[in-house]
Image (cartoon, rainbow, N blue to C red; front, side):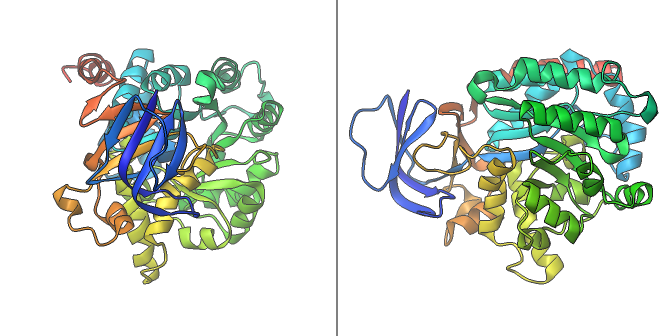
Length: 437
């Protein structure tokens, strides 16, 4: 299908033409065909007048746990370890495929409605998530978050469940949907596994050309315990076993060090900054300005809804800017442009998807329209300032993923929201928590 967007005000994230006014953007199939101030020749299946709206690349959410939508607000008011061990892990033990499908559908609906077109998700029963994502239309890097709690000397790839899960996920889903789904290798964290799994996962990633996704230095105790065990930070300990040879995502990075940043910059490891989740759990504040100065690619993630309470990327976009400005007492510590880069082009780089995150000819048509006639976006003296500090997810009026409009003016075009609600309320919540949801 061919679509022409007219009267476009575009925040392109393309350094060659970062902000366009009165422009035209054409889409052919899954790709952006042209971007410019002159109308392209030819006829189009659909013409969309963008007057009063702003176009930008769809958000790339680089660290999520989508089915945890079912745990929104559950176990609040606790630190990470108490929250995980006393609330989250017991609830997750009751999940089945049907619950995961329902939670995934609900999470995808929330993200799509607020402008997300690409994610990196880490969770169990990952094949169920992959099927939901494929049908919803967004792109995703999926991983299972490998854990191993057994005695290291007893480790066997044949008996380790997450080795089997990694193999099955890769064989069935890697590059599904012409690359819509990509599989990442993954280790949940240094503290939930040990060296034999790190070596196996690193070798598997290198053999299959996979990137890596790991929780890194999210809390002070996690970081300190790794130093006590190995004399190394979590990211350095994993590096000893080849975990980062293909690059990937280090989620959180709250207590990472200059030595860690040098390693990350050299190995192509991106930091997934999750400011909202880290603050809600009392984990701390990642040193984002310092990481940027050290050459680390910093992206944005919402984390799971259980520790964020929403997947609205505008919340993290705004927080990523104002938080570090306040901490540094410097209004330029993280600029509006840098925050937008984290949410789009940097996120694409973190996932190894250099074909998205930018509005430019030849790139994948992952585009959103934001309604700038909404009261919270009037007046507009600076488009980027409004996007970062004023907008929120409900201002998104169109989401186009891979050249297909999947959400428009409050209507989901690839999801059945009523069916999802019925599954969440009628099955998933009673199954997990008992009684009437």
